[in-house]
View: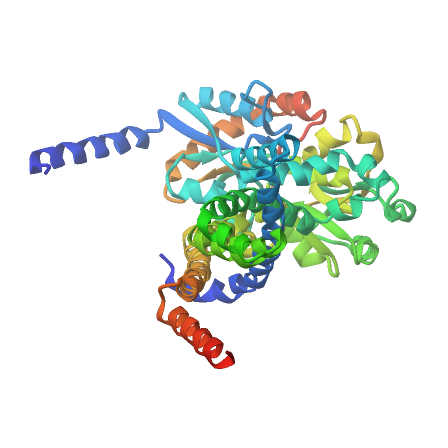
Amino acid sequence: MDFAALVRYGPELASGLPQTLLLVGQSLALGFVLALVIALMRLSANPLVSGFAYGFVYVFRSTPLLVQIFLIYYGSGQFRPFLQDIGLWVFFRDAWFCAVLALTLNTGAYTSEIIRGGIQSVPFGQLEAGRAVGMSPLQLFRRITFPIAIRQALPAYGNEIILMVKASSLASTITILEITGIAKKIIAATFQPVEVFIIAGAFYLLMNFVVTQAIRYAEYRLSPKSPAARARAEERRQKAILAR
Amino acid sequence: MPTPRYLALAAGLLFAGSATAQDWSTIRIATEGAYAPWNFTTAAGELAGFELDLAADLCARMEAECEIVSQAWDGIIPALQAGRYDAIMAGMSITDARREVIDFSRSYATTPAIFVAPKDSALAAAELPEIRIDMSDVTDEQQAVIEQLRDLTAGMIVGVQTATIHENFLREYMTDIDIRTYDTQENLDLDLQAGRIDIALADQSGWQPLLEGATGDDFMRVGPGFSGGIFGEGVGVGIRQEDTALVEKFDAAIQAALEDGTVSALAIEWFGFDSAAIP
């Protein structure tokens, strides 16, 4: 074990950190929007709409992400004339776009199931109460269903974020130099896989430590039983009394 | 809880295992299986190629029982060091950087590195001379060609297989290029065909599947063939530094195979030209 190597390769590996964070951030943001749409489609009464959503989730959850990345990147290259004709080649030519697309579709599929579970866990009584005070379906979704669903889904979604941080390493297989890509490059030149992967692994640990803490904090803030939430509720009650 | 007797037995088995390996009556050889025609995987999932045939010949000469395993290129040296196999035959060039971590047999083949680009590339008009350049002894004339190539490729996206002598060359001799690295030559070919890269550098023999394939007519060789110097001393068998006896065995077998023309015959069969090393 070459301990000096840990120091030597640290800075170069750290230069991949922004790439990894950007890749995960973009995919999670786009994937969440996609997941929301898919989850609502999945809950639709129309069998065609819910069937499509079910098919999408089934395909992307049941195939390996590595296969999806390869198919989107190298597969799109096989259809270059067609993609050029319809003007989409500019996107597919770019490895970054292909990586974000694959990660977005993948996390979209998983997250939609998490959100669906959250939505279905909203107690019927709460919805009834909302309707009783005359909320429109949109108001009902925005004020009651969505907040409760998110609170329910948060622990599972935290898991998904952690999985995404790790899954982003697969982008290194399509020429993207994020942390794992840079690690492979250094190993290629130095033949020291153990040392380099230890540092790379430490970076993933660090990122996921921050994610874990952030999710714990969000869970605490959103929990109706937390002192902070109780204080906020009390404050609102006081204001309501004063306003009367 | 294992008693000392069991421990002794286990230790005995361990040492017995390494003792039989030491006389090299059995040798485990790793290849990549994705670098046609050197070594590749057939549609049936079997390994084939120049090095597979050569390995069979060398093993017969060494009177050894050989097992061929496939291993991804980027981990092929670390796994040798970790003892997962005893030798590498995977189109691996003998270079000083690799010599620092592993040992090599004498070379059995040598082929130049060439650039390949699509025929509609801006480089087509330049008509660089297709000369042979020995990087350990570059003349002024050849240096001018290298500099011309450097100027012409400025701003281009250049593809190369990762952890190769070709990647080292690009990083050392070319400037102002965007280097994309690939795990295999096959994926490099795919991206050159897809137009994601403007030009790529690889071994002449490694280009054969692309240039002789269905879309081969769309691509052309660009400029000189490089060898020597940074490109190493040809292709040899990679072996752990402590296994000097195995290096000697391979050296003798390769020397014999080169002298009786076996390597040349196999090279002509697989590459279409004689890429055997000089005996």
